[in-house]
Image (cartoon, rainbow, N blue to C red):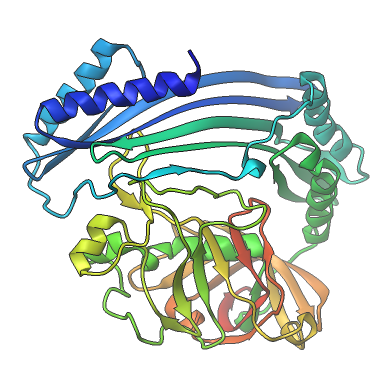
Length: 447
């Protein structure tokens, strides 16, 4: 029996047991395989192959909601799982907003690009992992490459509910990464770079090696700059980190809980008119592609900010019911998890400025941040974290900068945008897309 059919049978058994008990339910089942390699001192320090499967049920009975999961698909274990969920539900508070609402849907994630067979051999993968470290060590100033590796994972996810919805998703991704450590003249610098792809040939190990080393070398002589206010451009992954620390402002779930400062700001100006932001279900080459959400609804694009105006939040069906709005098919749920809200591809819209216009004059380019989440308060918007980068003028790096702290207020920062570039590109992970954005003034603590 195929793996998919085995999971399908398990889902049907669980749904039948839930219905016999008088409960509504939805079930998520997944099966995953992963392979990872790590290199150290010219040898493999890790060669790991893992496989896992898990099935989880959310039951709703008399407005009481609970979950339970099992890593066994044996009939007796599935029955115990359902019994445990029903028992748990008998002790929970009523939640009239959570209901099984996705009725009679049949959705498959039908994008061949996200699951491709690959002919690469284990020997090729080992060679790649070893070469990441070896080629870094060949660089003139390199002391070592403390983190190197290759990994791949593939899996299937199925969802079913008592209203007849059945969904299927299959995906595969691969990655490689390395860290270049430079030690020269009693100074050290390190930078990590990675590549993510759907096939082995799609990985770019040479670029990873060169980018990691070149950035570490460029930062090596960095020193603090004078304390003051600077125009700032965050390197793309750094910008993604900053936005991620404040991502709850787009969550209908945090709004429902009363901890979202934008809860009552729909239709109001919350950012510069230069800024537009969307949650996008499908992006070519994207790595967050999935045709259904955690409740089984078909995914679609959700506008969040248009020309600086907050036009909506991300909702599952329960948070949408709370606010009396349409859900956005942004339910998040795993086999082991409760119902939540999640995003897919975060896309900042293109502006009208050329790269030369965005980078005109003097500004600070920040390429590495430390302690972003611990240094950010999503309620007040205040943030403060360590940073490294370059003092730049007219698009040219003129001085490496290290040992500084960048501070400000997120809600002020996004209103004070000087320019937005006209070209949108993905980050290395294929989940965040943005143009160059220049923020007018942030506080820099240096020397």
